[in-house]
Length: 111
Length: 119
Image 1 (tube, rainbow over the protein chains, first blue to last red):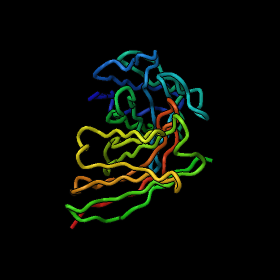
Image 2: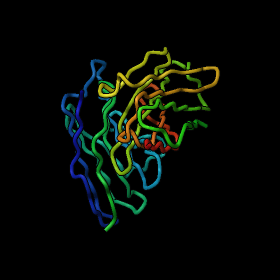
Image 3: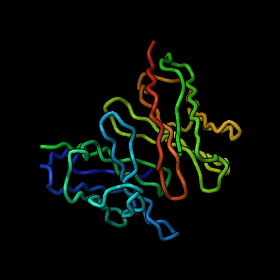
Image 4: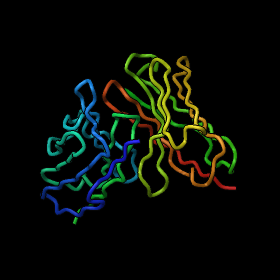
């Protein structure tokens, strides 16, 4: 099974400042079709998770452009260019290369 | 508008079988490249994927729970059902269903249903 790890596990950010979360997979997520099945989700307090980024770097409908995803193979990064108060919650990375598996989550709060 | 809604018991006793239903609207379970997964989240813990059913009725399960899970669907009722046998208190969690559309994994989620396993 593919294991996902994230760092840091918690992050406290000043509004308006950037933030970055790293995610690593135990094996390459590059599929034979040329696509990389890697995703980012945000679970705001008391809510269901919501899709932010799919296939490494594509923003889902309605996601602000301050969110960006990058990476390849086994190493991926989510960046928030300027954190806003509404961005607090737990961020999860997930792979869909073989079945599905999530990282442990990174809790983001505001200083 | 795409919606998913989970339903099932709030409390289940250890060793019993848990049956959860996901009722969807705004899309058809038989549409190509459409699928539905069940996931769960124990209180204060991370998300865990459990099972998935594809539009062609193919099913996949998480390795660790494969022997205890069965996913099925009733396209006429727009429902996806998950059964989990021999539940234990560690299965206490909020259970979610979520849609997969083509390569958009889990683009829509239900509100979740909290299931407590306790005698």
